[in-house]
Image (cartoon, rainbow, N blue to C red; front, side, top):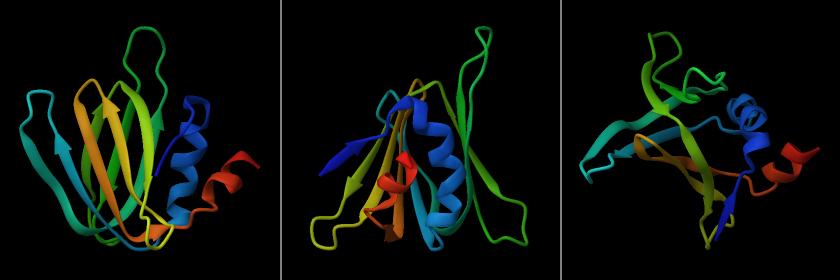
Length: 124
């Protein structure tokens, strides 16, 4: 099951993600040509930031991972156009976030998954 997050909720979703998720993430980046790169493997999520730009620059998302006492590893996502949460059928939790962008697809896998009630909290 998938749920697309409306663009007007991207910023609050990113701001609240740190409160909702206290586990590890694994991040895979699939570039437009199909090449794949592991960005992070079972690393703590420090933050996910959405930066809305004016007409002269592209919107951007930045994912920061790593232990809280170390400098984070950053992954930049330029000009995102779709954010999709994927639910694990067995647990009912969201275990993957796909961010589709001009720079390809970034897959963020959560361990443990996100509670399925987060969307209701986001809309509130």
